[in-house]
Image (cartoon, rainbow, N blue to C red; front, top):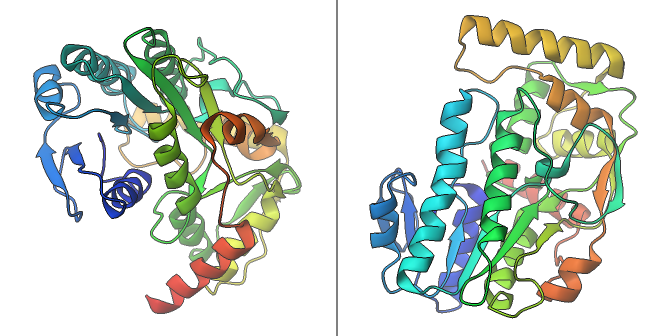
Length: 321
């Protein structure tokens, strides 16, 4: 497994170990996980090949995320890193690769309502993460053939206890009194509780093999419970014990502000995450939820923790901190 220090990859590795699998984790920094760990850069093709010796499957989760950085950096990590993984699989005759992608690869600024895993979109200027992940997914799926099976899994908005991305950022802004919604927060958005997302990757490892229906295909995984974004944001804030009244920002203004902030960040060469980008405003202001049936039918995966149960567990976690 690459990138095992992320919340999703770490939870997946723990699930694999718990059922008796031997897991080798390739990552940049040592993590608190009871597996063999190889420290290094995913762009080092020889290191990736060395770490894969003796393995019979690869879960490729390493990636540069966020919105801060140059196109060269995003491309080298997300695209060239994926090339290293595919090369290692071919070198050692590894037949099963699970490529962790993102629904952002198919997001073009319009609402996504009950869709499947549409083809990745490329040619988006400025959206370096989504663009690089689109290219990487296309490369990974194209490598699938008679002797190597690759499946792309797109977990949608993963959250849960310990999450520093979605949960962490919402709570940080709530504590600072800076929670805002694009529009009135009524757009329906599906999410994935962390345990469900990890189960999906485990299911993908078991399902993918040469000749399998899922080989060469992409699947969006989510809880299958679209909720208004306002409800989700308030639910996370309540779990953290914070009462908030979000400000509402018209979509047109949010898009303009996101574009302006992006330009300021580029001029400043800032290294911290901007509070808003145009791409983020598009996602927060439009519905995006997906058809859960392909993952259910082809991967034999169904979510086992509901959004409400996830919020209850999140509340317990915050109380224990």
